[in-house]
Length: 295
Ligand SMILES: Nc1nc2c(ncn2[C@@H]2O[C@H](COP(=O)(O)OP(=O)(O)O)[C@@H](O)[C@H]2O)c(=O)[nH]1
Ligand SMILES: [Mg+2]
Image (cartoon, rainbow, N blue to C red; front, side, top):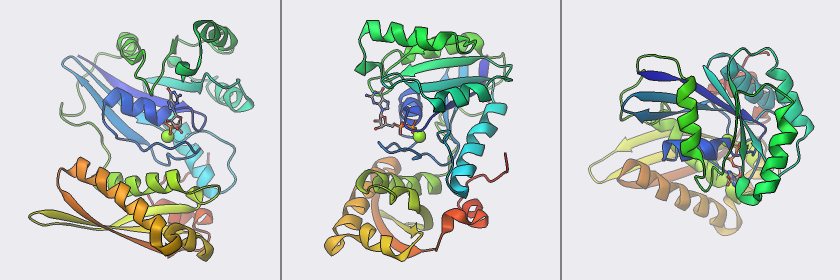
């Protein structure tokens, strides 16, 4: 029996959460075209008869501008120390930047295998992929370099096959039907947050948080109550939108996905409230379940 923990790290927006969902074949992590969508360590469990891999999705490593940013980075660093293998995901369709070099530096004392995952190769031709491999291969002693397209499910099977060779002999940690360690409360509030990330712009997505405050299951319907927390009064207007259109769209899209996840009709109630400067309040960041330590 092979089993182990694998951390997915990289800069924001390189496709880490998309890769996790593509491996698990289920939406366990939310995705958006904006950086810093992921705020927690989200674990997805991959099962085969003789193999179990727990993949840990992490917030993108970036230059923090507030306490929330510091907390996001420290979760990613924390996961590096806690796993058997690391997948370092880069966006192969953009040039290698300072952000990538910074992460490579962070990996310099790591004794475990690090795979370089060149993602988004659907945007590249074969020659461009080779150029990318050459660009990265001397920067670090990568155990493997694997080009993939997370969104098109391209080469994911090969990634799994190679990973298996590196996994320790071990018992399974979870039962075969589990796909994630995330609690349902968390998954539901994340769906609301994803829709806000998708539909609002600039600072708005980064200034909000979502918290499930009520869940009631009746015979035919599940009622879900989620607070949308903004850090200043003026954002409420944007979240609610003209004639309530924005919050209606967010609610409808989140509800449809909740129904799919829960297999039952859902009544979703959203409530927008202000907690001034929550991103600077360590206690509040902790309350939201984001790990806070000073790394
Ligand atoms: N073209 C392309 N886009 C991708 C691929 N993987 C992810 N994306 C897009 O990149 C953006 C960021 O994805 P996400 O998984 O949230 O990135 P994360 O911040 O690293 O977790 C989203 O708009 C995805 O649809 C891929 O393989 N190809
Ligand atoms: Mg993510």
